[in-house]
Length: 272
Image 1 (tube, rainbow, N blue to C red):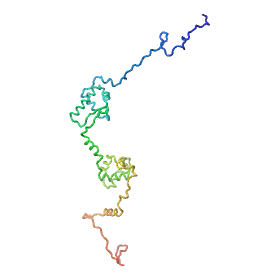
Image 2: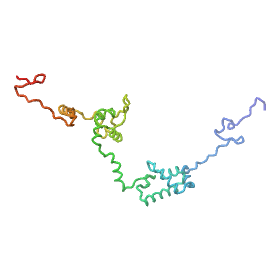
Image 3: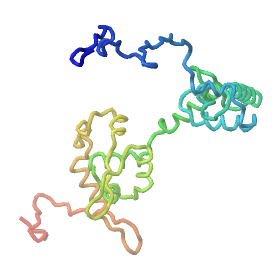
Image 4: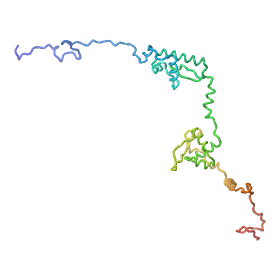
């Protein structure tokens, strides 16, 4: 064969004619062996706990379950409890059943129930009336007259300091203010330049009063005393008791004058 002669290559032996993606074994092209997928349930991480050896004694397991269930705000499944304790689910189920039996036999005020696929503590039905009365006691307790007056002062003058409320009422309001704060009817909202704490009513106050906003508060004018009544009350407050006897002197009435008698500007009687 001369150099200018090229060997004939079969069409199927050219590199670009080889099947794509084969494995080359000893220079031969082979197709990969197709395998059928193996069907079956996906292994769950908690499945291993079913047959795992117990790591706690029955008493220790019950104690741990009580601690977990006391902080649960919704039913907890046996699988979740087993995973948290790294304990076989069978041992957890036995411990839960033992706790249920123990609470029933000892007459505890609570019980362990299996609800919604999990376990949770509940108070017993026979104590429902007692508990509802206890829970609602604080909500139904009426405010004292002093608390209502203090709350009214804050509602109309807010933001207002404790000292100003005390000055308006004329008495100390420390205890009443603590009550209103505990009932969440008022709240601290800041401080004056002097450092005195400022108080104002809360949204809960509006809710309890049935108001949309503070603009719905009734006007004070219809509830204020008449000017003459207020003047009379102030006049009584201005009377000073006698320092010797401590008695309040009777009001001094002016002289009764007939038509022919008048008083001049100095108060002296003069005849017409």
